[in-house]
Image (cartoon, rainbow, N blue to C red; front, side, top):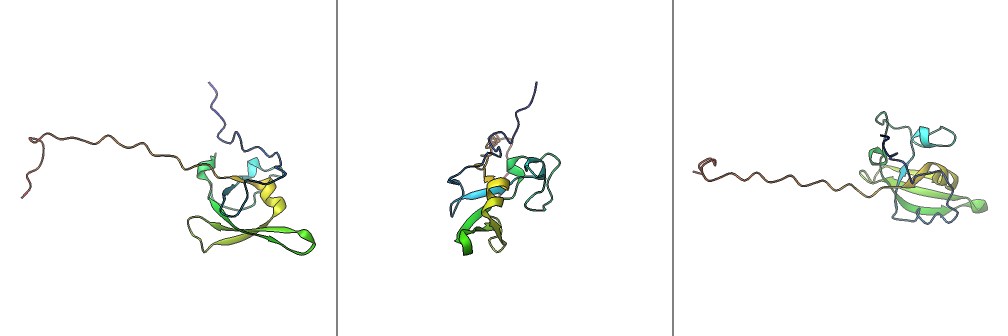
Amino acid sequence: MSEKDPWEGYSLSVDEEMAWAVPGARIIPLPAERCSDRLPDLVIKLPKNPTPYDMPVFVVDKILVGKYGRTKYVLYMEDSPGMKIERPLVDIQEKWRPAPEPQEEEPEDPVILSRYERKPVI
């Protein structure tokens, strides 16, 4: 049996409209092996075979248009908003993708003890 590729749906096809990279959107960097030029956008410590859930999540703060129509994205890390970075539009298109929805943790079954198994409350 072959396992499903966790990066399926994160292909490098360029989305012309970039509708997924708007202010407030949650995005993740692609690991080096998923980038077309094998150069990651961020140098970060990752597990051996990272999944989209292992990647740090950034939020698009602003989209700036500079001289000659060059577009820059200002991002901040979701866990620490003080860490801000700027990336050009080309890097966002090629090396970033929308963040997956957080995985819901399955609730554990509560342990129900009988009245004889409980510790006395004093």
